[in-house]
Length: 161
Ligand code: CUA
Image 1: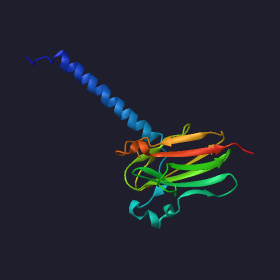
Image 2: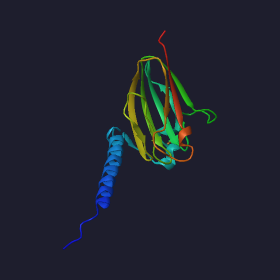
Image 3: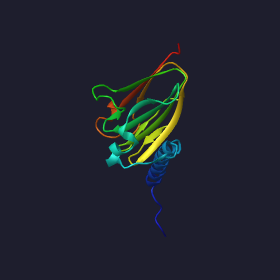
Image 4: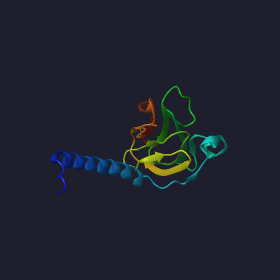
C-alpha cells in the first residue's frame, strides 16, 4: 500500500503550480507584445553602426527617427547624462523609435503602445504617432540593476500652432 501524500503537500504543490503559471504568463505577455527585432547589431561596436548618431532626426515634416541606446542606467539620446533624457516634438508627429541595448535587457513602454523590450544585439523598431499634446514620462520596465528606477525618458508633445 502506498502512503497518501498529506493535504499540506498537495496544497503547496497547487500554490506552486499557480505561482509558476502566473510568472510564465507575465513573461510571455511581455515578449508576445514586443514586435520582432528589425535587425541585429554588435553591442561592442555600436559606434560603428547606425547607433553612432543618436537622438531625434527629422526626416520629412512631422516625421522623425529617434535613435536610442539603453545602458546602465540611462536612455542615451545623444544628450549629457546630467539630466534624464528628454525630447520635444510637435503634436501629430510620427516618430520611428530605433533602439538597442549596450549591456543588459531594458524596456520602454510608451502609454497606449506595446512594450518595447530593448535587448543587447537586437535592433528594436516601433513607429508611434503622437496626436495628443502631453508629457510622457517613460521608465525602464525591466529590473536592470541598482539604478534601474533612475532610467527615464521624457517625450514632450507640444500643441500644434
Ligand atoms: Cu533599465 Cu531597468
